Length: 276
Image (cartoon, rainbow, N blue to C red; front, side):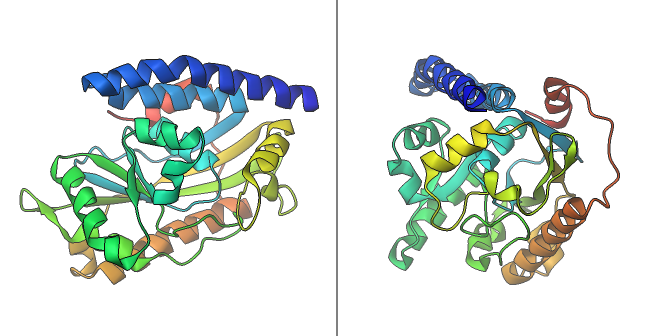
């Protein structure tokens, strides 16, 4: 298993180093391909890491669109980055992480400061992206969970969904991510911590143990988009609706009650599920 981890780590580092200069040039030139290239990058990384996706539903074609998902692991970035052509909303500390901070910046991540004094500034930054018709990916739990259930959503993060673009409400699409299978078997609570990164876990040791494991199956479900209008104009109600939709879907997926779908090659499934 140590050999497998080493092969995966070398593959990830080598491929990332090869892609970095390409994305740097694309971003510097302001090329439209700078939006598409990260999606290609994340898809290949999933193959390298042995991640198998079972995708349900379809990515919304609405623009602008705010995607909200539960958050279990750093792998969620690779998963959603491969399926959605958009930018993430992340806490400001991520921008200072060695290596990963640069990758986040090259995907045009919107960094938000948790301090109340900075809330207006970052809300404006997100609003500007949505006004431009962009897609943003948000983890409303504000942190990662153990993967067995979701944490309460932070209602304040849904404030940006109250704005209107061309007199239309911003589309909000809930996405549920469930770490459900391991080497073609259901994943239990003992195995899930190999993938769930939470609490005071150190990143590098956790990632190394994850790389030693077999093939993991992650159920990703895109739910029908909703908007602030569906919540009566109340962001708190919108947050509760998204939390209920995602929480119920995660619980169903982990219970094994979700009917299995015939799996195809990773690349084919990604191509079918993702949109420009």
